[in-house]
Length: 92
Image 1 (spheres, rainbow, N blue to C red):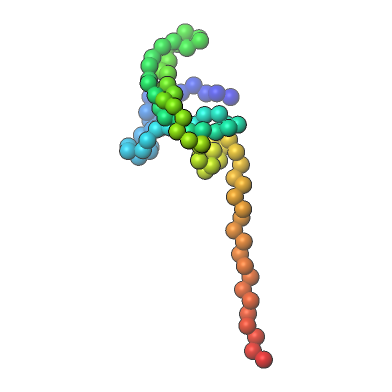
Image 2 (cartoon, helix red, strand yellow):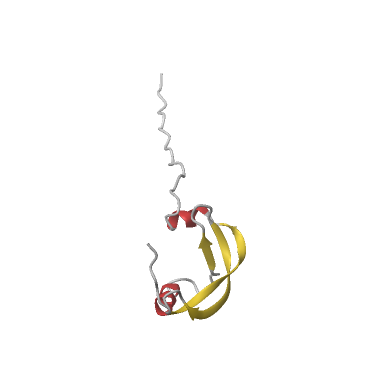
């Protein structure tokens, strides 16, 4: 279920990341893409509350699989590492 966050909460969350990291929008869980962040503007939402809208600045690429996994949009399907058994040489 969607959860509203405030500008304050968003800023606090963003402060935990590298200041030089780029910002991307992850959209469409069924066909995940990364989008550039576009224009930001303030307006009223459907309930009449003040809201900041983050515009879509265009598609960048497919969403990297590890990101989709971290967002829980897909499961991690990487094959487990197989450990080979050691074969001991026997002297005859």
